[in-house]
Image (cartoon, rainbow, N blue to C red; front, side, top):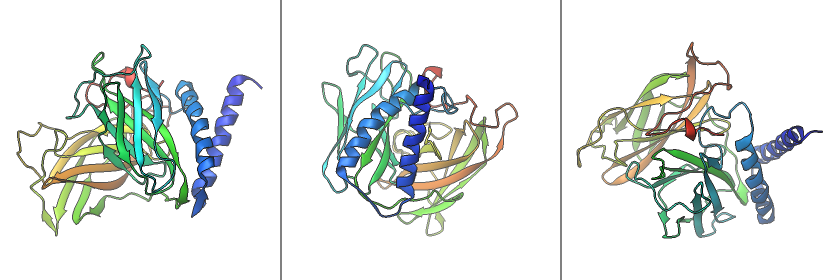
Length: 322
């Protein structure tokens, strides 16, 4: 059996193992097993970034390395309710930790964490030390496998890059299955709804509306340089799309609402998990929505073989998965 075939067989076996683990409710994952998973996944993720699988080049955020930049030394607590730090280093093309970043949406680095079943979403901003090590205090509430995304703009290139790694957490596991389309939800007393169709292969316009007690909320505050912050993940492989509202940036402390309009490019047909962050009275709230693509653009392939990608900031073709 040739090397490519062996790698493919290994990947298939590994995916099967994780699938069985996730569909088993209330499973207990031993910490020793978590350590073994972590060691294996580091190698598997690197191989995945070099493969020619269908999803490669279709979207961003699925690999440890892109354009010469690499996510290294990703560490985190290995079991639930254990206090520690979630930490990582961005290594540059010269093999050294990167310490010079551009500020993008008010931060040098955006850290997105979500369990591989789409739950447990968190968007945070770690601090960097002088040696280039990023860290933030961290405690896991639920066991499972989590994808950790780091989005940043190296000063040397000016291009937006998203890298990711998978972290495994031991403990009592209660898996969740992504629901059907969710176009309206409630979070912290706010009602959030989305209107618009996702069309694979072209720019789609989505309008998100925020209300409270049935009344439109017109006091949305600027958050990360916008009135809303939207992350979209493709259900299944969790390919990453990162978008911001369409239109002018907020001026000073000017408020807005109830609507925030986004332009989203979904590279392939399918289901997308949407996570909206918005701020009112100094407090950030997160709403989770789910949308299915309704059609495929005529100029776009009707399968995951497409090579479209989310466009965000100064991202270019070098930020696509390799």
